[in-house]
Amino acid sequence: MEQRTVKMECAELTARLFGSYDVNVRMLEKAFSVIIRNRSGEEGDAVTVSGEDGESVRMAEQAVRYLADMAKYNEELSEQQVGYVIDMLLAGKEEELSGLERDCICITTRGKPIKAKTVGQKRYVEAITKNTVVFGIGPAGTGKTFLAVAMAVKALREKQVSRIILTRPAIEAGEKLGFLPGDLQSKIDPYLRPLYDALFELLGAENYQRQLEKGIIEIAPLAYMRGRTLDDSFIILDEAQNATPEQMKMFLTRLGAGAKAVVTGDLTQTDLPDRQKSGLAVAVKVLDGVEDIAVHAFSDRDVVRHKLVQRIIRAYEKYEKSEYEKQEKKKQYRAQRKNETEGDKR
Image (cartoon, rainbow, N blue to C red; front, side):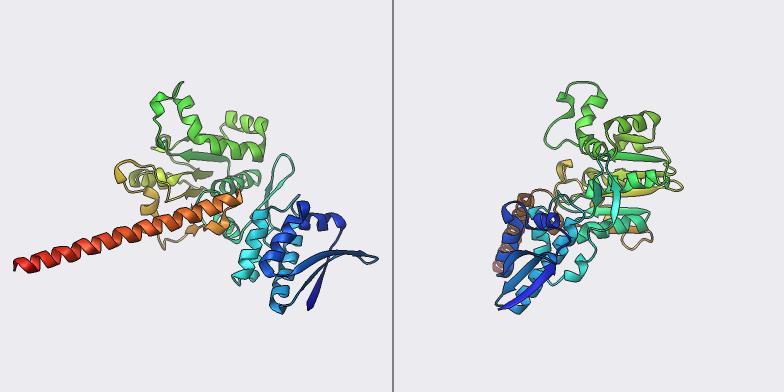
């Protein structure tokens, strides 16, 4: 039996690593077929990893080290984070995990540091830093919008921009705007709520309200962007899969001097009527290879919401793939039958 030891800085860090009722350690033991124990002595706290297979013990030790490093920057480790580290190690991508939790984007009003939680998120943040326009495309729960807002707040605090502009297409997802009570602002508020929530967490409600009144922060439907030139601004277009090609072109041509734009969306959740083309899908194709524009695609591994969200996304992807294959087989069968019928007529 092979055994490896990881020294821990303090008992509190060990407790975070193990998790409530040792749930994190049980996940590691099950994934790598090892035994993990806490050992305290005169030299301080340590964690031992033992097992029959040397490679499994090595990977489990690496997982413990990565998670201990993450625990330094988090009050607690989520099951999703533990599962992500396990998946990356089993996929042979351990080098990509190095330093994942160290770079802080910004600090919330409650003192909570905002950091990338996955390699995909880290690359997304790097793309926003290096490029003027970034498209963040991926499933729900990957942090596309929240990280974009965090980068906008960081740019504002560091005086890289003088204002933040957040916008979304006001497209109904099955409901009708006209049936909602109140004036136009009241009707569109539900569509912009995710943007409000992100700003509240990062700035605090009072500070957000002050910035809004001064015009430093602006939240408006996409249609309100027409005819404007947005200088010295950090602009975020959220739910961009619901923008038409014409709206997307209009938005992208609003950029002025010193501006930066992030466009986020999920191409699997388009609400456009009559199978209309998504402006996001068109823009990604049209702008492919254009300098200073980056496209970042998230995967289900980057989901940082409840672990069940990741399973739901994978289940839907499997179902949609199956349905697509069925439709393709039907098309092939119909084409074959048509050829046979035409051959009989001849």
